[in-house]
Length: 166
Image (cartoon, rainbow, N blue to C red; front, side, top):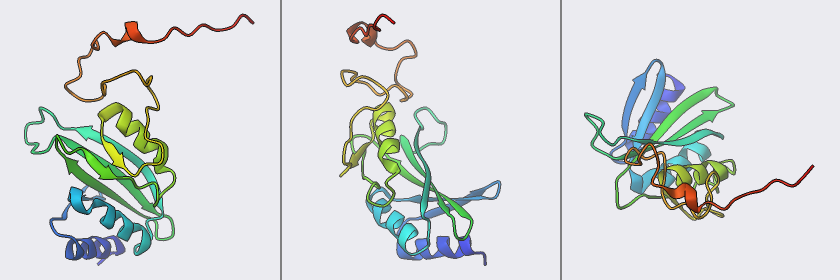
């Protein structure tokens, strides 16, 4: 049994409802929303996943077989053991809140802000959860599949920025 298989087996034993899958040699686990922080804490502390490579979100609206609206995706790496693991947390409206992982990986700070800005996922306990790509006045989350391609006419409300004469 490989090191990653042992990690996944331990996760499945410790946390209820953990699902596992593999695609092209990459292992993925789905962790329940209520247990995501504890599972991520375990992965970092006990199994040495010391690097958060990326944090993003997928909107599964109108996907044929999807049962959940959003999939929050954590890409983790163990530098010492050269392991990679994808952890997915499925979310549905109206409860789009998960604990912030900034206490575990400081680099999650801006990644969580980007996911909040683009998808509207709230990270409870985040030290500075505010928009990072769009103006604070912007009210929507444009990477959601139900956001219109041409926008909702928000651009006329944006403040005009003028550049100084050089």
